[in-house]
Amino acid sequence: MAITRRRFFQGAALGIATLPLLKTFASSHQPFQHGVASGDPLADRVILWTRITPDADPDFQQAIVPYSWEMALDPQMNQLVRSGEGVTGPDVDYTVKVDADSLVSGTVYYYRFFSNGKPSPVARTRTLPEGHLNSLRLAFCSCSNYPAGFFNVYREIARRPDLDAVLHLGDYIYEYGPGGYGTNNGLGRSPIPAKEITVLQDYRQRYAQYRADPDLQEVHRQHPFICVWDDHESANDSWKGGAQNHNLGEGAWESRRNDSIQAYFEWMPIRESGIVDQFGQRTIYRRFRFGDLMDLFMLDTRLTGRDRQVLPLNAKAAKDPSRSLLGVDQEQWLHSGLSQSMNEGVRWRALGQQVMMSQLTINPDLPILMDQWDGYQASRQRLFDHIQNQGINNLMVLTGDTHSSWAFDLAPEPRFPHYGRISGFGALGGEFGTPAVTSGFSEKTGLAKIASAALDGALPNLKWTNQSEKGYVLLDITHSRTKAHWYHVDTVASRNYNHYLKRVYKQNDGANHIHRSWSESVSGESPAPAPDLANLFEGLRQRYYS
Image (cartoon, rainbow, N blue to C red; front, side, top):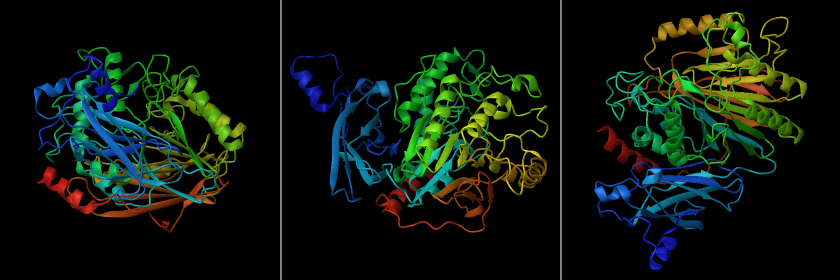
């Protein structure tokens, strides 16, 4: 049960002295230094998030801090519809999560928090629609390494008022310390704490650093997020029993994994389902329905069911049916959900997940990238068999992890005569891979172009790839087609950059393959953004970048 301020004072009046002293700030302290966010929208509710930033008072380490919140139908917060209050404290790192319920489906709301008499910025969110839905616009992104570059991509997503939600497909933070991957770029964004993070307090500090970034705060302020973790929220190339970057001297993997999960649930606007796996670990695979237009399945290809990666070129292990990427429970949940979605007449099915599902191996008997679905071919084949046997169509796979842009036909056997590159014969849908927000920005563009051309010639079902530029993907979905738009920025090494549309691919209803489109989708009327966008952003930018 949440401890509200009223319940706290009622307990104190009865002589209950087990809670720490209720704490207020000095009048000059700003309590909302990590912004506000919303996430996991459903038709009647949405998670609201913030953090009450501690002050320097040592007594604060054991303090209970009150807060209140309110929601309205207008950005001026005049038409209030919901409100509440509560307290937070050190057990959750002073984070706040409210599951605001009793809302109306398909509706834009505005919200804010109060603490110590001070308001947070006003933010915008929306609930999922019910019934018939004409169109849907989603952005998805991944791989946002703070030291590797500026969050220009987040800034551009924040500027789009036309989005229904933003999907983050993992690597929201990175675990490395100074000298680790992506940390030596001289941009003044050195990781905090100045070491590889391995315990709860480390992970909390790293999230706090990321959430102080003004572009990250702004994209959360403008849009509800639907998130899953990948490996760097815990450690590189993680699996259910360990990680490549978990080494001797770093404690037990179970402790590190559990600490990283706790920090994730504290700092992300994600609803906690209460479902645990065989290790007692909280799970994050879940489903969202956007009216009759799309079912979104957010998968966990990392910690719930993944068996340990095997060495490259080990085709026998890659095809071993006893090895799994998703685990038995998640795999059954996904197969059942896809069938149910099809039977209930939903038009599209999308899988939001971390690692590339399409084949990235030229010779299937010599697999190389064993962290991808290529290293778990039996899991992939079971999914493909279920899709084919159940007649499931209009499938999209949305993928992060690779720091690159990809457009694939999703084909069980992507070679002639089983698959036709032009006709799309033999394909089961499309896979769209998002580039990184920042990660890996230092690749040589010339070499990246050569790599892109080589891959395009070697992989029959690969329609296009870009290996150098950073950005995000916009999905514009109607009942007749889905268009995937790749928007890129030309640099993340500077705050001065260009933003542009790079490529568009389309998947038509019932076609189950993709082809290039030459036109950009035009958005309809958009709701008002959260207010004072320019003033708030400029103030934060001056604070952190001056």
